[in-house]
Image (cartoon, rainbow, N blue to C red; front, side, top):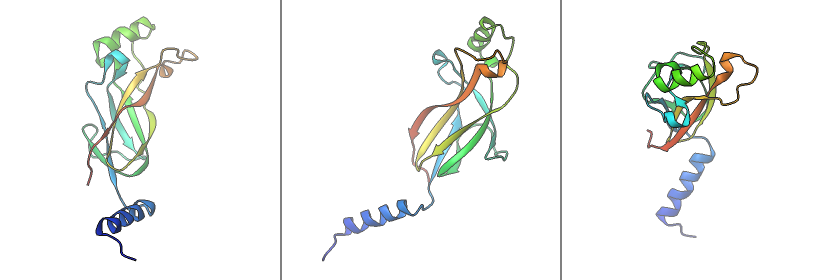
Length: 141
């Protein structure tokens, strides 16, 4: 039985994916996420329990689930300050929160803070949550 060269490459590619060969993706934060959707900047504090070499910009990670600890910067934006004021908050506490990001090969994930419309028990830290607000496809090697 003869296989074409393309078929051999396809089979090798599928085997590489199935057996978990290393791949990579990126996480980053934006200084200008879409404020109209109540997304605000964050600063990355930790990735998988360790401080990253950089806290902003594009950070390269291996494929798999990573826990990203971020600190909101909502009051740093005029719209954010006015939204906090409407809720009777002068500022949100500086309590970092984590978000799990399932990094796929060649994925790029942008993280932001999202104001929560109906915060639960009145605890100021309940007024925001970290979210992946955008997923992009970007070659990573």
